[in-house]
Amino acid sequence: MKETEEPSKAGSPYAYLALPAAFGAIAAILNFGFLGTDGLSAGASQGMKDLVVIGPRIAAAVVLAAVIQVWLPREGVGKWFGKKRGLRSLVIASALGLVTVGGPFASFPLVAALAAAGVEAGSLVSFLTGWSLLGLQRLIVWEWPLLGAEFVNLRILCCLAMPVIAGILMRLLLRRDPR
Image 1 (cartoon, rainbow, N blue to C red):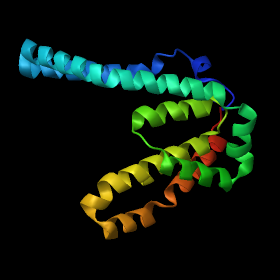
Image 2: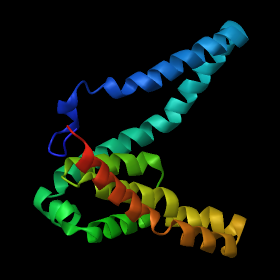
Image 3: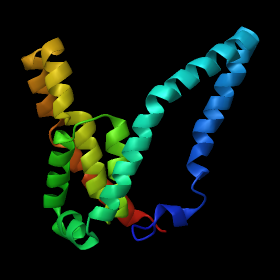
Image 4: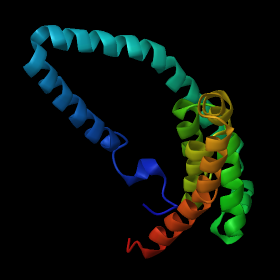
């Protein structure tokens, strides 16, 4: 998909559900094969409980992403996170990923909003890689208390350049894409 295309113009908006739906169907078949109807009933019950907990979070994140998408000016975002900004845009996106608070329910809709606002793919990859490898909230709440400062400091040192490298690789892959 070219960067100028909107995701909705790339095909059916439900095409991305095919793989998770296939995995869900396989899991349901296996569950039925091993546990029978009781297993299917238990799985459906647990799925509904999860949906009640997770559904409102996803809905709130999608609404927030839509508001951000409308709020962000394409010119301003492109100025800070365009290919023409070079490594600077990848470093800034990595740093923003590092300080972004929240799990995937917050981060992925935010990335979708940034993509719709014109942020190029290399910066989006740097943001997500910074968020997943160097997330400050996770470091402070989980890693330092459980694993200790020495381990965390070494892990950060090993991962520090990865968001920028991932963004560069994404740009190179897009450049080689014959579409």
